[in-house]
Image (tube, rainbow, N blue to C red; front, side, top):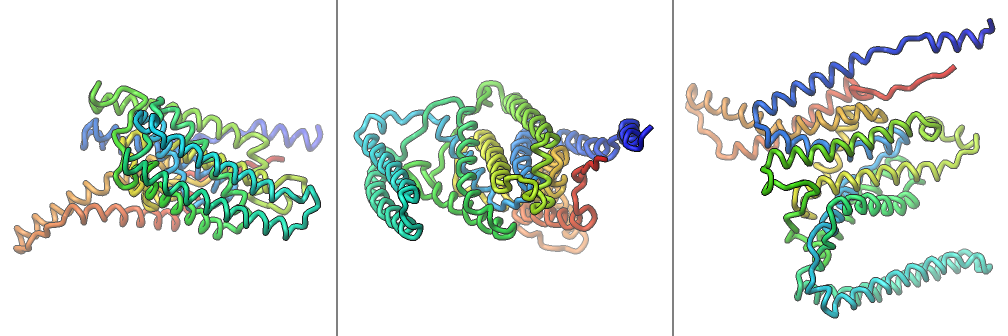
Length: 436
């Protein structure tokens, strides 16, 4: 028997490890969730689980960027906002008065002008096929881009000012909410494609800074485009893809919504796991671990990095759309880096970057801690105040609620510090298999 055959036989005969850590962690998480149900009630707890499921989709999008390919995206908030906008724009009723007015045609002409400008600029950048020098075509493209920007922005400002004064905003499309979820993922993927084309050549720290800045730009655009999003006036209530609370009650409606998000997570988890163990996934991890050797083997590094970045952005857009629909309101000011970027990063770090199962555990655990730290901190403060008043005659502060709310940040900060100190690869780290 040859040595090679013995090695294969040893690999086949090796029994698989019982997932003791996974069973223990998810068992403890289940006990904690049941405790929340017993303490807070079914309606509150089911809402918490739905929001945690939406965040789990966001975390899966980040873990394939960061865990699979080593791309640190600090602009999750921007893609969440794009998904939330699409959920609003596609599900809200049609503004018939606007579409029946001449302003709809004028807005369409502005859009066509903008598309024509994009085509002209792209054509100018392709003049190398006619032998035009690089510097000349670059200067021509920049000049044309500036010219069309000034023309379009001037005309758009006039039209949108009239829209806001007469109709408020253009309204939605009156389609099912799931249509907005799909388009939200597609729009986030398109935006991620253009960001990736520009930023993926940067080092990880510069990529984080670039994506963080772009997320703030997206938020600023949605906040100030009153004709498109109503800006700070907000849009509500957003319809659900399942019977709402007014039909079947809060608890049952949220349970229906939870079932939809659970099916989405199951499908996404299955596809990502298959991709992770497929040759494509091994190639992505090879590029992450040793980019030079992967390039030497003929792999298209930039193309693969762009693929994984766009895929992660698509999941973030879908997660943002489902979260926006569930919240029932579109408020551009409500998208905060702390809630929609930092919290997702903590989920991935706690669970384990690159481990899909660990990411789900991290998302559920961190959001449970995030939500429950406020009422628990308020209970502790009330006990301390009652003890102090009865024993020492302390004067009770009047802002216990705000103090308890701030405790969430302290608890999350303490949690991430402990994880980075004692489990830097996460509680369920990525399992790297060695062959041969």
